[in-house]
Image (cartoon, rainbow, N blue to C red):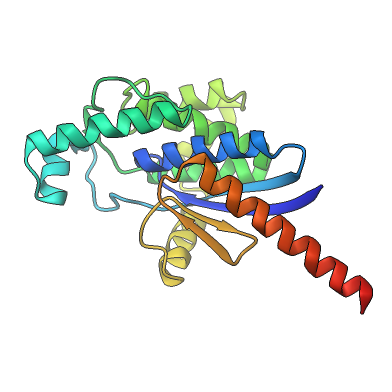
Length: 227
């Protein structure tokens, strides 16, 4: 069984990131007898300048893409179908508002640093569920702590993180780093530090890519053994 590292650069407020994660989960389930994965999440802010309180979602998307309300609604319908197909169903209602997610990323960094990668994964899922399935307010600390609780993490410690500025500088450094290496869209899934899969790809793309990388790794190992 091959061990593969995956760095998943994404934002909690990104529907395609949730879809991409769902597809990756489906792929890993198909490949569970072939590969073992170390999955780590890294921050990206789609709305870094969004003020407290956020913005109406339809208004935000119409401004961002210069599209009509009808076009945005059709796009949202397609997103719902893709999310369901990826095994990560959203609420049938469009999320009411778009938020800045810096506090989410601080909690995710805390989970990764002080708990475990497995815990960070659980928290990432719960934060995505809070936003896309429960339509909750990501500016509300109690909403974030609710996701922490569902992920089985210490809520008292999480509250201390939110009430401080701990890990703020580390998150900013990570945000800057991924911009520096050319990550300008998410999800960006970096495999073994050198292969990039972008966008909310279907599970088949991840299966093919991961299997190919695992095979290449096996061939490289065999070549080294023969030298």
